[in-house]
Length: 298
Image (cartoon, rainbow, N blue to C red; front, top):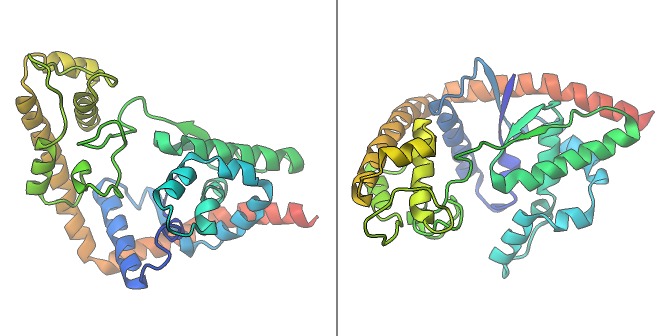
């Protein structure tokens, strides 16, 4: 069973003052994108985090097995603190990884696919689970981390030494699934390459981060190994390589967008998915929370 959680509670750590209407719209946008990218609600459980109260209940219990020092060392927390030096940092941002632990451990999760930037958080989840199990027995399944060998970290188009991010102030660094096709074309055409003459379409993350990033994107879209792509584009100019990548990227995104706008119009269907998903998620989460509470109360 696959679980897909739309983390609206986590979203509040960054947007605490966001008006409810805006958050509700973003929730439905996210769900429609899940469906457009191939998530099948008949084969998976798709639910809204705040609809399953067990998440926050287990979060509070696990906070007693989480330490100030280790949370202070979280790279993502330190990065966001430095990014917002003039803005007061809320407690929820600090304890974000503990709620993340509850999200995962509630479902006795075996495997969690993550990006490299979340690896440290998953290692903390494992530590919290080990800590609890050491005291009370084998209650939680220790989740294994799945890091894809390729494609798990796409870099910024114009600054490929940092990751592509939805919160980047330079919007030309990121491609969004709902971007206008003309805008996507412009962003990719402006993507950083290098001044090698003759041009070399090869993967060299240290010396050619721009081209390496574009090769990674193409590899992720086509499923081809980068070594094979290097041979395929050995004699290509950067302009022609970008044109080929654009054709593939636009084909994929157009397909997603076409499905998205169909799903997004059917508000009733989207709410039904969330309702059914929450009911199914609670069947699993209630079992785990019941065991945990019984042990703590015994």
